[in-house]
Structures are given as structure tokens and as C-alpha cells.
Image (cartoon, rainbow, N blue to C red; front, side, top):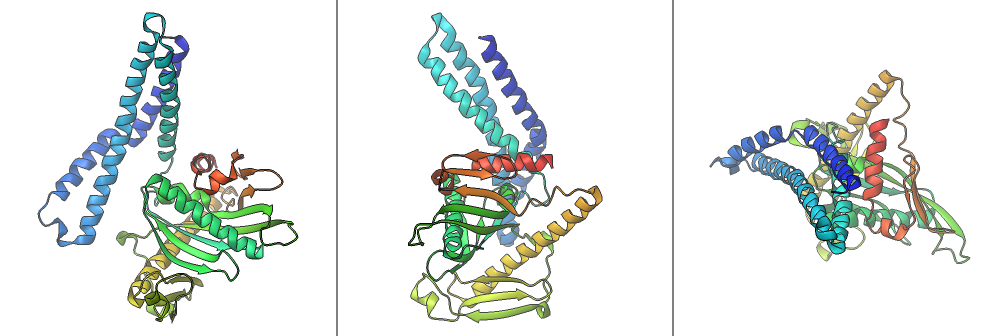
Length: 366
């Protein structure tokens, strides 16, 4: 085999070996065996919540093991493919096929390597995203809706289910705010690097003089609460308001006072939900969102104490973090990692994996 190719494959194998070590494949197989045993119990579904957790954890761990085993198998097959390409004086088509597979495999191993950097307490959870328009008037509201679509398209690309809890529409265009859940393994750990202020620079479609406009939108990311979290909310600390839903929706949604707004008095956190027909369902969904936000606040407070102990200011990057420029040139740039791409349309259509990976790697160095 060509010495350069052999060296490249050896490097790739070493990277994959380090990923396998971090993931502890033997430990993963033991967890799968234990969960399979639990899932096989005849009384499993007597407690639906517990059963859901068992089957969900089993499915996730089986998927993780299958993913890394497939990468090792592809790496072995790739070495054979290169050797076939070099036989009998060389086969250009086979070698070209091997080069394409090498690039894909390298990207897939790199992506899995990034996953191993997600070791925070809540990193494996589903994610709850809240997007708010900030300075910039109608352009900011339009930008907030563009960001909502960006994350929903990213989820769609990866086959991750989403659930929109609440959207408050602006008068002229766009949205004032939205809250939605992305259900995926490590969704919170992956998307938590998106938290902060996003900035858009473009010729405003809402300005009849065609002037350039800068607008801002804020992204908050929280881990979805699980039963073991013990996020208790005292009834006396809660103000509950009901109101009629607004914006697009069926007649049943818009003609009854089914929307619910919860205000947590000690912290001032306000959440609302209007996507369900029933006031009871909306209140339950709003409580889920409120608990997630309180859990994230608790995590941030713990992180602040740790940063204070380390005498470090490196955790204060959560303000302005990315700029999307549509005029006078085309560029999206992360202000923390310096990662940038020249195709804002693709980014706003959900192609953000490069930003997520660079953000996770950057955070690990802080």
C-alpha cells in the first residue's frame, strides 16, 4: 500500500481507537445487556414512564454501539478498497471511490469524536430552545423566525422529532418569541453552544429606501427535565394566567381561553403554551418548560461557582456569538471559534453542523 495512504489510515484508526476507549465499548455492551433484561420483564409496562425510560435508553445505547462498530468495519473495508485499487498496476475508479469514502469516514469519525467531548451532567438530554427577537424592530422579529426555521430544519435533516410549545407572532412579520423541544440523544449538549445573541446584517426587505439593517435575536437552550431532577415548584410561587391563543391555528385553538402563561415569582421567569386545545394540556406543557428553565438556571449557578473557584472569566461568552452577513458580502462567522462559511442560505436552511462541532471543541478548551 502507498506509504502516505497507510499513514493516513493509521492516523484515522488511532483517532477511532481513542473514541472507542472514551465510549468504553465493553461497558456499553454490559449496559445494553442489563437494559435488555429490564425490557424483557413482563411487568415492564405497568409503569409506562419507567418503561419509556428503559426502552429509550436501550435504543440510544444500541444506536451508539452500532455507530462505532460500523465505523470500525468501514475503516477495515477501506484498507481493502485501497489495496484493490493498487492491484494490477492500479485501478483509477476504485482508487477514486476509496478517496471519496476516506473523506466521508474521516468526517463521520470526527463527528463522533466531538460527541465524546459532551460529558456534562445534562448533555445527553433533549433540548428546549427559546428564541426571542431583540433590537432591530420588524427585522429582528423576521430574523428570530429565520433562526427558528434554521433549528427546525437542522432537526429535520437529522430525523430528530420536534415539538413547538409556544410561538408569539409579531404584528408586521416574524415572531416575538418561540419555545420548542428537539428530542435527540445529546441534543442539549450539542445545541448548548448556540446559546447567546445572534446578529444579522442585510438590506432590510421592510425598508422602502433599501437601507442596510442590523438586527439581533437571542437563543436560550435548556435541558429537558427528567423525573430524577427534583425541580420542585411551590404553588404559592406561581401565577397562572389563561388567555385566548393568537396566530395561526385551528378554530378550536383560537376560540377558547386555552392558552396558559406561568410566571415563577421568585425568579421572574415567564413561560407560555398555546399549542394544545385543552387548558390542562397547555398548563402541563408550560410546567415542563418552566422546570427546564429552572434546571438550566441551577446548572448556570453551579457553573458560575466553579468558574469563580477557578478565577476564570472564560465562561462569559454567552452574549454576541455569531454574525450572519447577507450584504455587502455573504458570510456567517462564529465570533468565538472564528469558524466561518460563505453560504448563509445553506446555514439558515439548517446546515449548522460545522458550527456545532467547532463550538463544542472550543468550549472544551476554555
